[in-house]
Length: 79
Image (cartoon, rainbow, N blue to C red; front, top):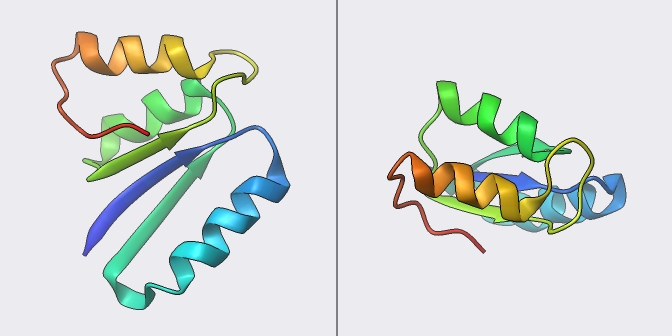
């Protein structure tokens, strides 16, 4: 099973991603958060196969989140 992390501060978009990945059935386990801070916290406990992030979010935006992920030498694809 693939693990995907989606970060977005808009609930409607997170709901849309959940619906989209639900179509994949048991092949994808989806994790969501509303800021880069939540994304970093989730990454402490999980290894993801794909990360999808919004650019502008409260607490920590997408660019800063990506910089922190890459600073840790994490090669996970980020969209």
